[in-house]
Image (cartoon, rainbow, N blue to C red; front, side, top):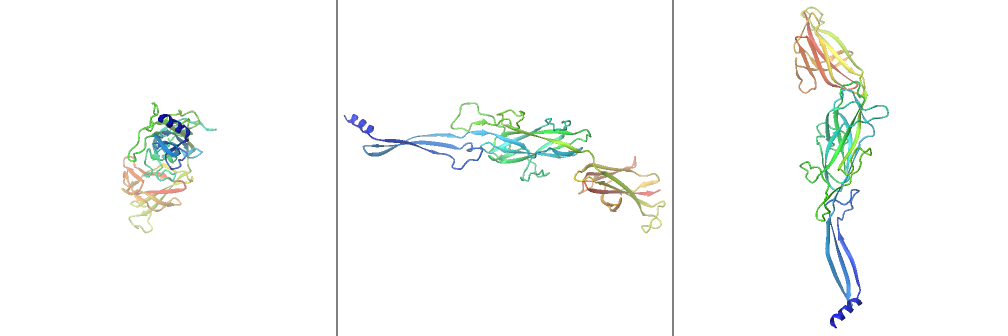
Length: 372
């Protein structure tokens, strides 16, 4: 009877069941709840027995949020990078968004993928390809500042800018070259080292481990990228727009001394010293001329004055009004300048090298001879 009475009492009572869960209290961004977040859920039962309120709790059901791997790679600009024939260190820029629900590293590589615009077909390759990550977020490639070659510890929903830097060949038929940035999601969590590429989990879901699920698809929309491979890619082009610049060279000479009058109103007599001035001018604005080599032969009936080459001076009207930096006849570098100069006694050739002559600027070089 006692047992039966208890059963009847329970049937006469009332009960309610609720559940209580715990998870990350922060509102997740577009990438979703962070991978590794523990989500715990416990059920609670409340009931009455003979009018007395009672409760009972279930065991805790716990699992961790898995890593949903995704990324987006797009060109940083809508148009190809405009370059000139022979241009070194030409830059194209891309932006990578970490759509993964966790902090990740990204491995970077490049491929020369042919592209085509409305009027021009891909017909050349660039060389000396390098990849750098924007370190200060200014969106501009800074030589010596942007040195990282992989993206390190990029948080969920954050964006990084990546630069591909390459040299354009000195090829007059060059028109268009395609370049593709390929990004591979890698393990994060170690700011001091590059993470290894992620691989998807293939076993059944483990509630106590962070499984890896590739959720990326054809990132460029052109079918070039395989879906669900943890990679993203985008392409841009190096497009030749300038094949030459308006570069001119003006040469002048002036007698600087003679053995009779010295430097006061000197004349071009035997033994006099004559200075030749070469002024090179690039009249094409915004387009540099690279590897400018000025060469001149010491004329007959004169002798080169050793150590007289100067480069980087100021020329006005084709004449040197301010001498530049003294060069070394052996072709060695001039300290604190980009210039070099040399004299070949066998060929009697004077050379002045200017690595870059910016558009709208001029540079003067000079050397001296003695009249035999």
